[in-house]
Structure formats: C-alpha cells, structure tokens
Amino acid sequence: MEELTGDGLTLGDRGSPESAIRARQLRKSYGKFVALDGIDLDIPKGAICGLIGPNGAGKTTVLKSLVGLCDAGGDLAVIGHDPRLAREALMQDACFIADVGVLPKSLRVIDVLDYVDDVHPKFDREKALRFLSTTDIDLRKRVKALSKGMVTQLHLALVMAIDVELLILDEPTLGLDIIYRQEFYDRLLTQFYDGRQTIVISTHQVEEIESLLSHLIFISHGKIVFSTEMEALQRRFVEVAVTPENFSLADELKPIHTRSTLGGKDYLFETDDDEQATPDRRQFERLGRVSTPSVADVFLAKLGGVHE
Image 1: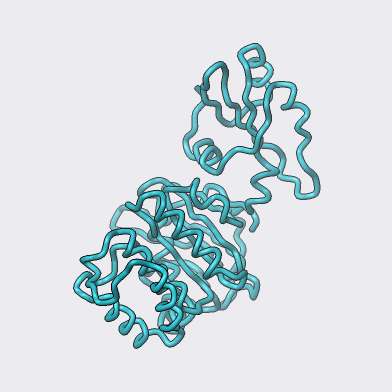
Image 2: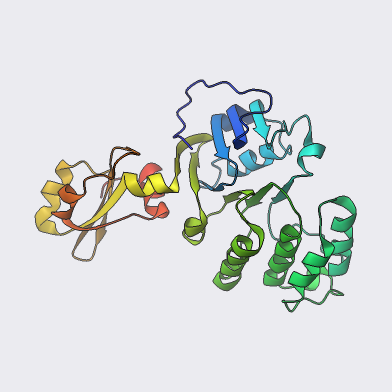
C-alpha cells in the first residue's frame, strides 16, 4: 500500500483485481459535521489492516461505508462490489462485527446458530459447534446470561464458521479483559485467517494487534493522515534513547517527537522511505540506544505529538 496523498487517481467500476478495498474521495457528512473528508483507501487482498484513530476520527463511518450501512459519496469498490448498490451480493462474501454486544440478548446460543445458518449460505454450523465445544458455553443459555468473554467466544465461533473474503471488525474486544482479548486475536489468526482473506480491524488497543498487521492506516478528523505497510514502517522510523549530554546533537537531526524518560529522552525520527535500502542508523547510534518504535509511538507523533 502506497502512502495516500490524494493524488487524483481514478477508480474503475470494480477496482483493481489486486485490491480488496479501493476508494477515492469518500465523503460523508451529518449535517454540518464532516465525518469523512474525501479519503482515499487502497487495501490489497490478503492484508490484515489496522485502522487507527482517536474517538470521532471517522473510523466507524469508514467501516460502515464499506458494508453499505452508510451512504458515503465518492468512488468505492469492496471485493468487486459497490456496497451502496449491491450490498446483498457483497455480504455473501463479507462479515462485519461492530461490537461484542450486538447479538440479540433474548436468543439462546443454539438459536443464534440456527439464525445464522438460515441467513448465510456460507455458514458452517458444524465448524461453529466444534469451536464452541472447546469453551464453557452452554448452548441452551440465552445470550444475556453469558459473560462478556463468552459473548466474544460466541462471536468468534460465528466468524470462523463463515467462509468470507472480507472480515471487518470495529472494536471487537471492547470492554474485555486482556486474556479474552488475546484469545480473540490469537484464534482469529490461527483458526480463521489463511492468507486468502482480507481483515480490517479498528481498535484503540493498537499494541495488541500490532504483531498481526500487514498494513496500517491512521485517520483523524475524517482524513487519512498516514498509510503504510508494516515492513515500511520499520524501515522508516527510528527511536533513540538519548542521554542529556547528547540532547543538542539529537535536536539537530530534527526529531518528529520526543518524550521524557528516567535519565534522558526518547527521540523519534522519520527517515527517507526508500524501499531499496535500509536507513543508515549510524548517525543515530552515536546518540544512544536505537530501536524500532511501536505503532502507538508513531501514532502519537503523527497525530498531535509535540516536543516536550
């Protein structure tokens, strides 16, 4: 995925055969509030893409647009369909989970399985039952009687039993403890994803999905402010733990963000994004210990980080 710069590229009716999601100048307003301000997206097939942004940035509006739940303007193709015109066809090959609490609370677990089996032709009931057999979930219980963690396990069982090309997750583990969050993502990666599917995840717990991602998008105030492949992120950014005697030298290299630490500062630098070469880190090594910054560090720097 190239960094998106609003370069005026045009989009055909069905997009590129290599793109799972491709959008140009996607816009959506609610009255005077601009939720999406002409964003471009290019997510290749097989990607696991993190959509990261602060509250109110437009993340949920983007995701709803991708599955036809929001009538955004602009050019849009999602696994070969325009979701505004062909939502029923799209949802045969796509699955959207908005939150772990959206399952009907009055239904029994077995009723939920019956319902999904009736409405989705690609649902494998036996596969869902095999997964649920590894949990403590009683099929006779109603959803409202399940713990938050059990609801997440039920959701995951449904997801893994549907053979789709595209899975979209909007804060899927919100409110869960760290054990259930980790289990959700571990099983998603090992029991659902096999390299063919495309997964888009929006979450505030970026540190928990960082190791899963192949692509990354930052969104703020309805605009895409940064987009990259994870491999390029590791080449492009350098973090250095600098001691006080080297502060002035580090400042001369124009960091994009700094933060105070015990005994010094961490400096974040952005290098030239040259795919053919690894940045020369020797200029940084003389300042202190060099490391690759986390996605959270880059996020803070790109979205409002200030020098301390």
